[in-house]
Length: 109
Image (cartoon, rainbow, N blue to C red):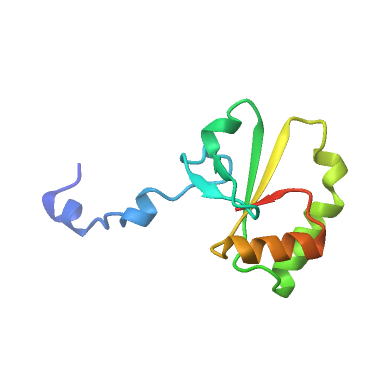
């Protein structure tokens, strides 16, 4: 049985660690604007499979390849009741420019 000293030495998780999501975990509810300024709420997609992918910045080399890969595989997603959201901290205007330039058929938030 652990002693009080053992319990005191046990590292408590930080708030970020305590709430960290793992692959396959349900996403917390969120609301965000897309590249056209339309507001999306996760709860509105409850009847669909939602794929969220997070990336650091629009139009950077790695992020562009990632978006192009999803774009090029888009036929695999259509007709399967799947919605894809790319999420970064960039502005609505930045998302619009990036989505238009890359011909992205999915939504950026």
